[in-house]
Length: 342
Image (cartoon, rainbow, N blue to C red; front, side, top):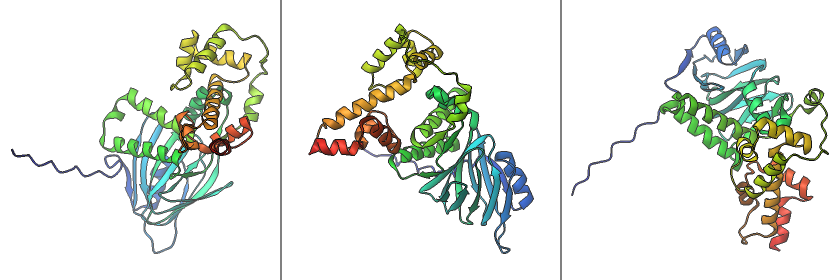
């Protein structure tokens, strides 16, 4: 019996190699063409001995754009502030230094950055640096956030600027981004509009779950009328609560909960806000916190870990989870587990 040799593996193409946007050594052209992807910005080469060799590859989708960028020289970039998009970026090699009014981010392949709209910043891109980036439409991200948590409607989101990509939660985001760039480079899924829209939404939901952010609650409070949470809840709210209590372990969505309760998603949100004072997903998170607490109080084995239990119940960002757990139960989850194991 003879075997045919395996075909040689296809060499991986450089990210977005089929989508060149700008290949130039001319400073004015780089400024002008770069502004079409980002925004108007100042760009200066550091040192008289360096020469630009800019390579920008870019693939726009519906609400996000995927890009790869290198300058071939150390450059200072000052865009002032982004207006209508978030910029998520991380070097494949080399370093970037990002200065904002709140923080200094030393970006490397292990640490990305996330720039918010309206946030003044400037950055230095090292000569040996090449980065990937995702341009995220502001309205799309904030609309999705308000669908997940209606109390965020009308609020701007301000994300923490540093993304430590080696942490468990952000490593998951990095894996998703790596896959998305490979698919954008060599695959065909993003050519299917429905699939591309779902993949975009999955990426944005993951970002909302794993990266800390703050919301401008004061501005939203001025627009949102006061509502009473004391009136008797209608039957559909009770049905939704019962359903979530029995299906806490499932990957529930608001639309599915609303379907089980027999109302529209909008009516479900309005009913919870009026009669409970919080959203359906807030209620579900509290149920899951209770399940986490129960599992930590009665660990299945001596090898039980807080991270495993939290992930099992849908909490991807350990910092946000720990803060919510402490607020609810008055101690850190690790203290609960340590006491139970003792």
